[in-house]
Image 1: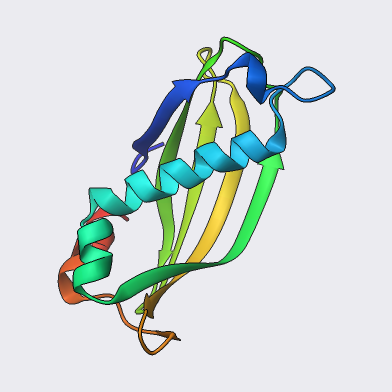
Image 2: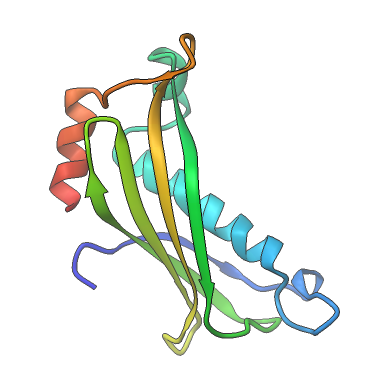
Length: 136
């Protein structure tokens, strides 16, 4: 889709399998988590940003739809697109696909920008907000 950014690419390993011989949901969620941090870093919200600005991001809602099994040896990737941006809130969707381009799972995340000292929501800084808006 237009606006999608590649945020994760990796392999499905045999140790990712569960008792039904497909990738266990905890590993799918883990790959989506890696995609989230890569996504944030892509517009300036990396470890240094969070430390230097006493900022944080809080996940407040996560909805996952599982579409297809992922098997050992598959190379999967996640692409991410922003679906909503407000002063303090960012909503985005990760879509994980296999090597054939088939959708394995989709994850919609709602996150809130935080002041990590006050432990309260805070607006995105203007530079971050502009970078996010450019991705819409």
